[in-house]
Length: 596
Image (cartoon, rainbow, N blue to C red; front, side):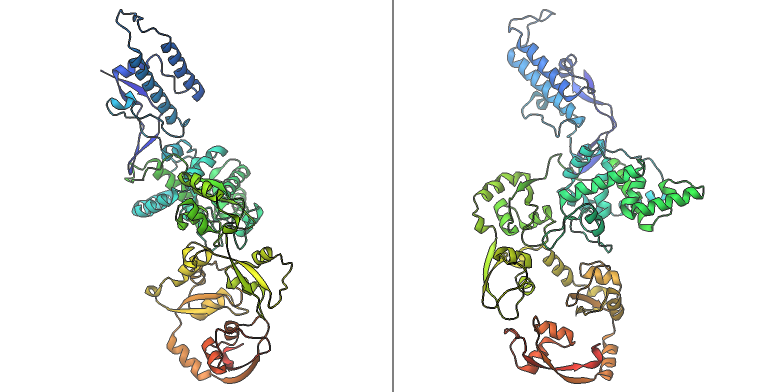
């Protein structure tokens, strides 16, 4: 004989790699256990404290029984050991019930309990997908061709979803926890998929950066810090908190309409307001689906709704998602001061790539001297990191090198040479201003490992992007140094490529400023033969005498006169290894048709 026990409706079970939607109302339990539960199990509508109290009362009542007490039907009472086993089963099941309601973070059924020794229970493991679904608040029954178009794309590209959800596993628990704390719709935890595919290093053509894709002006408005060392737009904790606060603010602005708020997050509140006002003046509906918004925004909201529908009804759409444990992936450890990231990874006994993925806000080889002085590490490595960090002498947090100032040096030049910042050199050497003297020694903070070791630092990520072979798409790789007056538009026209392509090849946005001397990699589609033929016809070579100025280098002079460094070296019989001295005379042979 079997009896059923009521479960919370509408949960979703994730078993192994498969999500199966469950709307069944009961779980089959053995009759012996059901009989025990019938007078003891608290109702699911009770709070956690009430439920725990029910278990405690049952324990107290049972503990007061005498071994020799007879049951009311005249049969011998259970032995103390039997009663203990039954009560352990009761408590385990009660905790499972609480977990189903989201009142416990995960199932705490104990190994060896009678619940596990009976036939397999149908109570599902409570994972992060369950928790996320319980926080869904938006209307997902809406039917619109734009939603269907997004659903069709996702169904055709299941591997994309697999990659994105796998990437999200580091961050999703934190995002869901913050959403719960603020009482926001659980669907917002899927928004970073729409924004960045959950890539904390994402950078868009609109200069938006990070998992939540903040543009510089919005970041400044919300007080997100950004400098050479650190970009808070990529920081997992800071960007998530700011994004959710911003979304809440937009929701309040649009009177609780989440579709309008989401559209505003993408297109700006002013654009959405104007569209609503125009529709209202024209006597049209002002719901999201009726507004005239940018194409990107008109696809943005449907994409989020489509993702939420897929997660909620994964089995219906034939999708398999890996179960994500309902427990924190990372925790924050106070570092108190700046530390080399290679050193930190070693102390935490994790790879430096893992450290960068958890702390993508740090752009260089070390944490920022101005903070935040914390590092996120996997939960299971936190104690190890704390212990090893406490035993590390302060002098070993960073690498240091003594440098003798040469004639013509500047703080900027030295900082670039050692991949650090002028401010770091000032701080380390107690320098005020920019004045330095040749012959004096400086203490320079340097990376403790080879540059390649910091593969996810901003410099190394740019190098990987620029070195990527794009010859399959046509074009010849050209290295170009930006000149005064250059723009993405003028350079792209010259090389017959798109502005966005050019910016993307160099990890930039088309609206980013271009500084003279900056190196760009271009997959030029300009005809080499016609260019050289045209160039040869117009070449007018002139001998030019040039006196080296303060701050000059061979590369800077070569760039200025459109010649090659090796030619300057050859013409003047000088060594590349020796520094140029202010006042030194050089002879150059310049094509005046190429210099403007």
